[in-house]
Image (cartoon, rainbow, N blue to C red; front, side, top):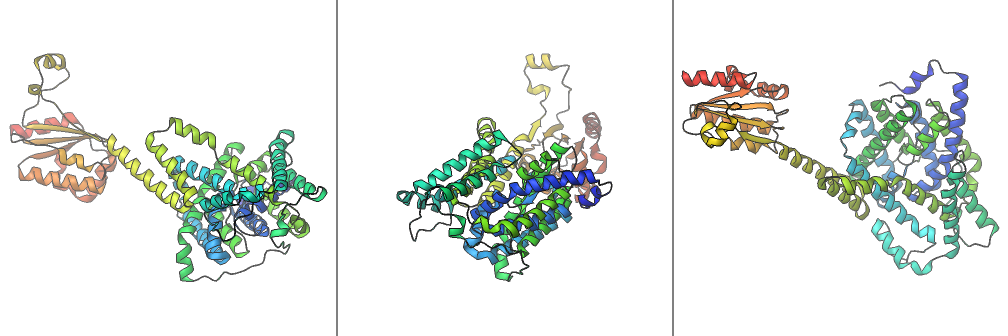
Length: 549
């Protein structure tokens, strides 16, 4: 739990500072149009996006557990933030963001950083693709210059799609021309140079088209009041009712921030060959989000594209991320009035590109072709629910389905097999298996379990059959890696049943975790410690001794 800045500060050189300074400036230029676009997609003003990149970006870099993480507003939050703002206003968003920050700090101190890997890839792919679709649908209005019919609800994604179709007759050709040109610039610019972001080129081209050509297109200044004032501390009015209302959204923001930031750290580790501190990163994300909310910003997390750009341009310490925040602060004071000149179709084109880059359509199609049916089910349901309902519902139901299907898969892997006796075989089988089979007394019965014995597979224990002549029952446990309380209870029932019938229960090769569970539950004393044998040979010898006795 030590910020990476403190670890890299020792031995920090002037040469590295110059590299970090250059990388920070370039990343700030990349972050400027993206922060504005993502803020507008989230239903807030353009300055809120820049406030987020400044405050959260600086704090997370200063306290974070990564060498090169760049934080700020990301597309993953756009739809959920827009929903919170529509329902509860900016006060509700601030409350949800502060709660999410507190949850992230708790997760970090509880060392939950490694638990993020338990979120299935199908769920992250499903909701990421769903978010990309919702962003694209939300930007179709500005890209095509369509006006929504008055009075139609446009909070949910499906409502926006219906309103867009209903308002198709109001399509603005000028807006479509600007949007198409900016989209073409976004596609072509990276092939010419990667030193300057395509989004900045697209925004400049859009401004010049609207200024120099007779095109009637809405700009940011036409729809929003632009402020170049510095972010000011504002304590939102927090009430129990408000906190209870936004708590589900806060958990979703926290989980998304944790997943995206740690994924970004993993990508950065691969590019730099260094290791991040996941728990410290979660704490930094939490503090950064609290600070962002207190200074008028929106939720933030590690941004993979901006982090990669930082690495490619020489950033190797958290100083680059702090420079990125400071440069954006300077831009806010000096250049913010010019933001009002940016045409809305240019912003829509930038967000179309963001949606395309984040949708992971290749991974989506690959999973549809190659994944098991249960994984495909989770993928498709999470994707559809993200679009039709919201991210909270999608993650909740996706995780529930993934857990249920996993338990079903594990229970299918658990088997119970009873040994066959020589008298149960035909003469041909006896001749063929004579060397492999050992002759057991009919008074000894052997069953072998394979796979985890948990509540989904505990019913197999009830299928153990003892006959009238049975005097010893051997349970071979070498293939059982784990045992839970439900299966433990079933073993207690079986042991009591055997004792009533005068049958001795013997267990063979019990592994470490099941043995700990049995000792803790008192099962070892109930069955008799002498009836726990290290292997099947010892267990059979013990049974034969008891039968002879």
